[in-house]
Image 1 (cartoon, one colour):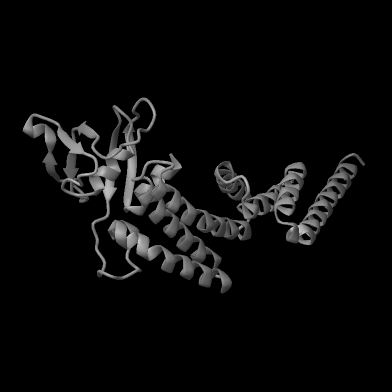
Image 2 (tube, rainbow, N blue to C red):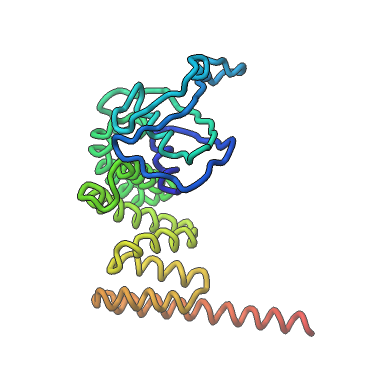
Length: 266
């Protein structure tokens, strides 16, 4: 579900579910026919009705992969369950062609793929300059572009795997920003997702271990950090230092709690 949300965001779409559908989200492979009714309204105070499929007496039929009318239709339909009723607000602004500053939704698939290295590089520059929040957004935007492209591929296929290989380092950089922002549970979640696919990713073990230590999960922190050192022995001294810091932090916390309890019962 999170991946579908990223895909919508990459295309500049805000979704509001009016009636929940049934069953799982489907993988709409090219050639799939989707049948649905729709209304198109302006984003003005009166919500002026522009188009209504029911006025024609039959639903719209969309063949996935044909990019009928606007590609945004495929993105919208791919985010829905059977029987769902949702409202989508789509941004219609445009940017100058060839500009990597344009919003991801406004880019073609080719432009998104070409823009990612530039966005990644800009994120790195911002992070090194200490502008962590801005770097976080850059990494997020690059991930959203790639997720958007990846959702159009069959999981496990060559192109899907190639895109995933581009997403992983970006996601690790994003996690580093979240570590700095002390959003540790998000780091744990994303690193776990990486390790579910790539069991030997040293950086994911290391970052998850640090995040586990930051939320007082000493056992899990020790396990992850030790695994990172096992996979990359050059990290042994760094891991030892991290473990000592975690132990000291936990010992200090325990001492503070004991002192607090003594004060309460005096």
